[in-house]
Image (cartoon, rainbow, N blue to C red):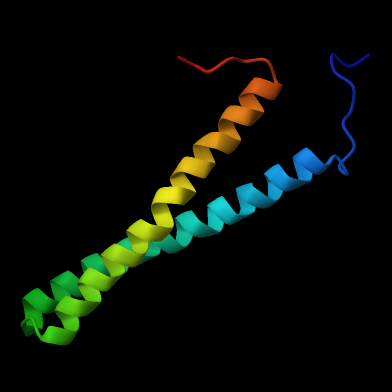
Length: 93
C-alpha cells in the first residue's frame, strides 16, 4: 500500500503548477539564451569594434533577458517549494 493516495492528473492545482513549471522552464531558457547572446555580441564588438547597433543589441539582450529571467527564477523557486511542501519535506532551511 503506497504512503500517499494517488492524485489524479486532473487536479486543478497540479495542472496549474505543471503549466507554470513549463513556463518557468521556457522563461529560463530564453533568459539565459539572451544573456549568452549578449556575451557573444560583446566579444564581437571587441573584435570588429563597437558600433551603435552592437551596443544597443548587447544592452537590449541584457534588459530583456533580465525582465524574462527574474520572474522565471522566482516562480521556479515557488514551484519547487510547493512540491517540497506537498511531500512534507519542509523548507530545506
